[in-house]
Length: 228
Image 1 (cartoon, rainbow, N blue to C red):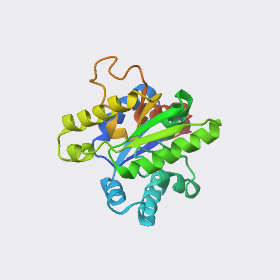
Image 2: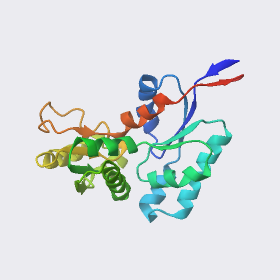
Image 3: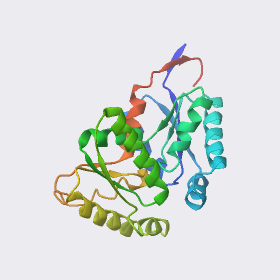
């Protein structure tokens, strides 16, 4: 009987994100057998209409389908639908992970003055809720500042990645002066600050979800099976 790495369903709502996560999966969880599922309408519906029960039900259906397909875990990479991932947990026999949970816990460990940057208003509420819950779990007092980086989402969807990154960088520079840590709430923002010259943010750490979210998969055990 052969030993198989755990099968991981990585569920995205942005078409570009499999290319972001593939190298991280190879680096941080090389024993896993990942496959990607992309449904941009989950995010589009949430942006347009808010957190609808039908969208939560659709995400839960993806989780159940992944389990039926033999997945050992589902990693949801979209913070806007992160609460739906939590709602799906009682309905599944496999773990359902939010990509941003480790980031929220790390933010609270890092400092008490936390700035959360997003490009979508729909992401701010679930991310702030996650950070606040992490603070309660760690018994820490925090203050939170939020910004939706006006214009950045429209720039990215319009194909202007450079402007998207520049708008996020401008907000990061503004907030770094009086915060202990910056949190980029969306996985699609992860590379926005990589081109900034060293020292631009005065040494304030910037947390993103793809790397720490993927690290969660490193501890998954292998399993025995006759077929891949």
